[in-house]
Length: 152
Image 1: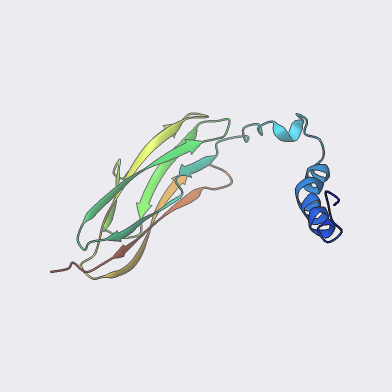
Image 2 (image 1 turned 180 degrees about the horizontal axis):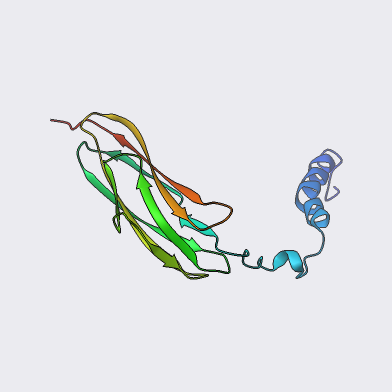
């Protein structure tokens, strides 16, 4: 009896194709320019980590806080010269007027507190961070939550 019968040959060839052919198609790996990290962007460049946050299911009339990190991935000082919120239920620390300088490669904290409304439902709020980034002068941080009714 042969080690591989004719009826198993298509299955073995298919498995070979799935497992081995992608390795050959990918080609050899070598360290090249595409493996090196990109150089920092010219001028100030803003990023906020995380760029958005969902608090999930929450109770009514609760204060929810989250710290965001404003990061400068550019080559010059990033100047944050204003932070505004979409409503009075959202406040920031530091409080407006915010004036913050973030050095290249550095980060600066921004704590946001959202007070949930009394009525159940999905809420979406925004915090706008204004800076001297020439490509993204205003960065929008998005906040979400689902207010659920308290159970008696």
